[in-house]
Length: 185
Image (cartoon, rainbow, N blue to C red; front, side):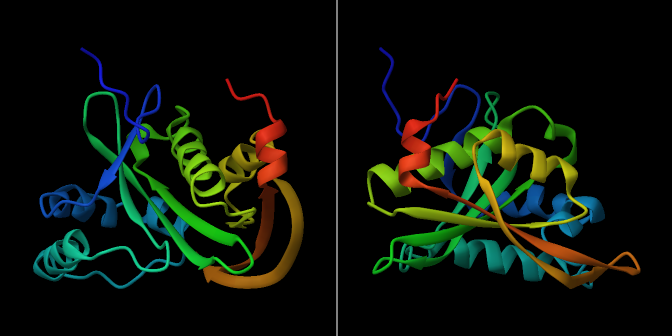
């Protein structure tokens, strides 16, 4: 018998962080392109420190609708992570950040994970607006947001320095009404 799972899409499932995820997350830290796609490249840290952080994260109760979730593929492999933050219940606004490991990029996993998050925040928690900050060098993320119906709402110049260059923050937004009106395949 199949059991319906709100957090299960056609190709991905979102789940809580488990202590065992430290192993795969340590490999993500070695992928400078992936880390750079969500910010500047940090100084390396130890596996022990990451393991302690992941264990603490796995025990942490969500606060103010801030969630850290693992993205799993159909094969139940951890392929990325999505975090919600800056959640403002009073005004109904929130943001997210996502990381997809290199071998899994370009397959629609990020789009499906973001769709699951939007469905939950818009239809279950009654948020009304999602804002996403995309770095101007991340062409695939820009394209994904545009294809999902996000509107480019602004640009802040020279906000991040990485790889020897300054890049802009691009602000994309989508409202609950725009999300509801879109045809999702």
